[in-house]
Length: 250
Image (tube, rainbow, N blue to C red; front, side, top):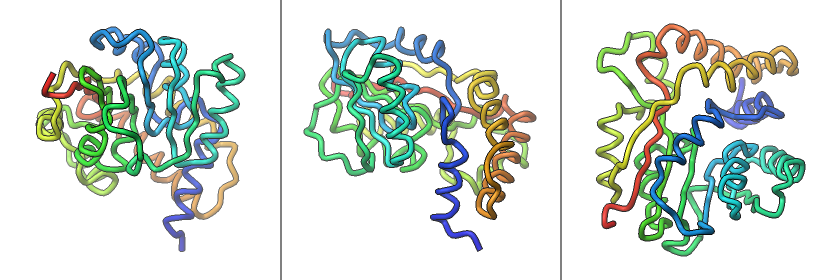
């Protein structure tokens, strides 16, 4: 029988060596940065749940400022370190292996808080509340979250995500959670479905062909294939929404 630890280890191994550990696209991220209000010349930046660093490296290059890149996985932190050096950005990346729910940073110490596809590990509302004190006055949080796009999503999609992510909400609910946690929503943008296939599912499918298939890996692959099949059918009903947020008292 697969333990939770076995499944997590298999999931990490499946994503080892990939550019991204979740859906995303550099050009889309840059377009989001174009919507962010002006920040200080050298903003204090954090990428929470950074994985192997696709977002952290983009932020460091864009702002030419240090990025605190936080992830609990030693595998991904090591990959991030190597990638940063290869990209000539090692001096700007501060890799931190830590629990993003237990950061002991001072209040108001971050000007741009970035988190792609990671808040669900804590639950969106909990992540919003935990991270709110870190933001400076006038700071910005860019957090992507799995969101329902339609009230009448087909039952196969609802059933899958009811098990995989029971607290997944629609965009209205997520915006209301942000208000309740002390933010105002500046804008939202949905990640295009082609970014899922081009930058995540495609490479992930190729990786599946190369991994050693242990019982735990077999279970992870089976669930991932089901997720892909559902997204191919129902991507108009759900996906990642990027919430661009600012403290409500600004």
